[in-house]
Length: 177
Image (cartoon, rainbow, N blue to C red; front, top):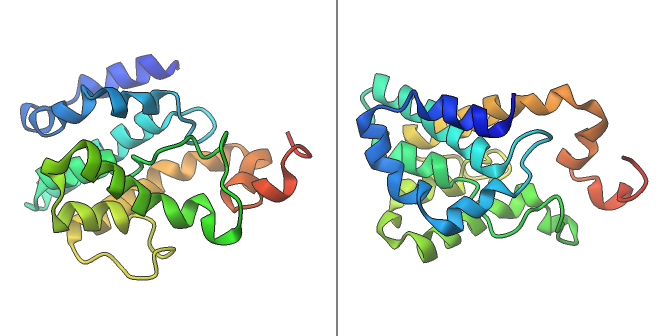
């Protein structure tokens, strides 16, 4: 199914509360650029983030947690600056898995200062636990972290690409296609 169709299908499931929470982000030109950023093999960062946000929101709502901040944090958890697959950074400590969460929160502060608070910061910066070392503080952060991992399991469908996701892209760049 084409990505546009997938996005359209998911958006048809949004309730009013979710739509109101994320509308400003979805209509932001900087956020829309993530439609061109590769996430995993057949998804953009935009689509991936939308899935993580919406499913995290639904879980938080069922659990009577802060579903608004969960939706916002889930949508912005991968709001980093560059397409990491086409512009990899050099060095082990600069691998995408280690740096993009802090980069995403800095980008959030610049583009959406109204969402700069401790819970949203924790959701975004700790979604990569255990790579972040410090665990999430809030249940909402745990939800986004776990949903992100569940949604990302689609990468298992592409074993020839696994090297990218375990940090070996720099070593094998140009050798494996």
